[in-house]
Amino acid sequence: MIKALTIFSGNANRDLAEQICKTVEVRPGALEVTTFSDGEIFVEIGENVRGVNCFIVQPTCAPVNQHLMELLVTIDALKRASAGSIIAIVPYFGYARQDRKVKPRTPITAKLVADLVTAAGADRVVTVDLHAGQIQGFFDIPVDHLFSMPVMIEYLRQGHGKDSVFVSPDAGGVERARAYSKRLNATLAIIDKRREKSNVSEVMNIIGDVKGKDAIVVDDMIDTAGTLTNAARALMEAGARTVSACATHAVFSGPAIKRIEESPLKEVIVTDTIPLRPEAKACSKIKQLTVARLLGEAIKRIHHGDSISSLFI
Image (cartoon, rainbow, N blue to C red):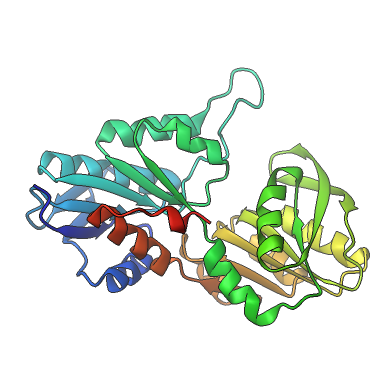
């Protein structure tokens, strides 16, 4: 019988895990993650988990392979310790951009990672804002796909009025931008861009009226910030009054912070699914919100067998 609830955390985002534990009102589980001199990962569970509902908070952010392996080894350790159930809380699901074959003889790595998590012994996965919603189908176990929208909208209501326009940075993100615009009674615009190669984008055209309005670019993640800063410049040239951005996952790799600081962006709103790098914390344009309450509520409902449908908005 499942008798209790424990929340463990790997090394990827311990601050978020601690905030989730405060929300759920439980102490963090005793888990030690160490590495041998050759880099092999070793995990030791420091408490009895027999028959216990075990949740592991571990986004697979940079270094992606290290944190992914930590997650897999922790799942295996819990399985061999006779945990009642093992739920992987993966706020940021790495490799999600490799969700299809973009050219011949290339992998679908998102499916591979899903298979690894399942084979390791996870019973359920909880994640936030997948790069592509269909990745849920890559798993052979239940997946709860949450959205950061409630957290973002709560913040946006305070500082953005009726003159706002939500902007999708590409055709694939139109549904996301439309959802924001509906909930805040704002208008919608789309940026038509063509990507010549990975991490390089070129803004081609803006569909919709942004002149004299506060533009808010909505995306699931910010990686090198090339797409975002190009979009911001194009929007300002099209007559936007201000340009802000909101994105769930603050990957911020390579020259991202420098590009944001040098861009016309007024504010960049992100969540703590990924911990911020020191230079990102020092950037005055970046505002970080927490998804701890959202994930904590999901954990409580899963533990008690309650529906979490109302969190899928």
